[in-house]
Length: 169
View 1: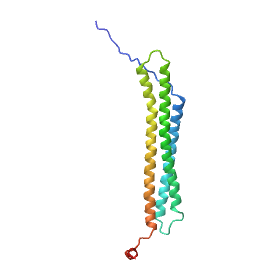
View 2: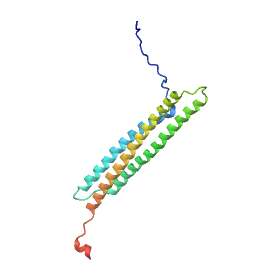
View 3: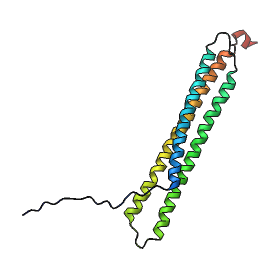
View 4: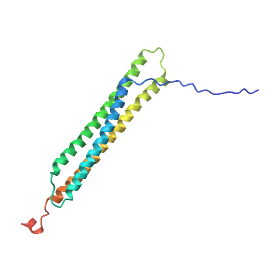
């Protein structure tokens, strides 16, 4: 006499379309990732040129400081993009949260599960933005330290090492 009971899943929350500013923010993140890859390749090329200049026996044909300053500007721009990405991530989250909370004002009865689900969806672009921000900042710090090591090694090779007699006089 046992009837076949089937359990059905009735979601209490359906996904809603993303707002235009979140879609624009995701496109910005894609643009910044492509820009990061291009800058990383450019920085690697400059570091390789500096390494080749260091190993030249007849001296460099171009100044390593010009290459170093160009590379330094690229690393600073990555750090600036990291800051901008962080701020835009926070702006997107606060804008989404404000939209959700404004919609709560007009409802007759508040559904807490629905509200929390929408806030959870608003956290996804924030976390993605913070990941990209961390990647940009880490790339900037690593490339800047590699550039400083390369330039200090280049300057150490270029300067003559004083002898003991020169140091005492």
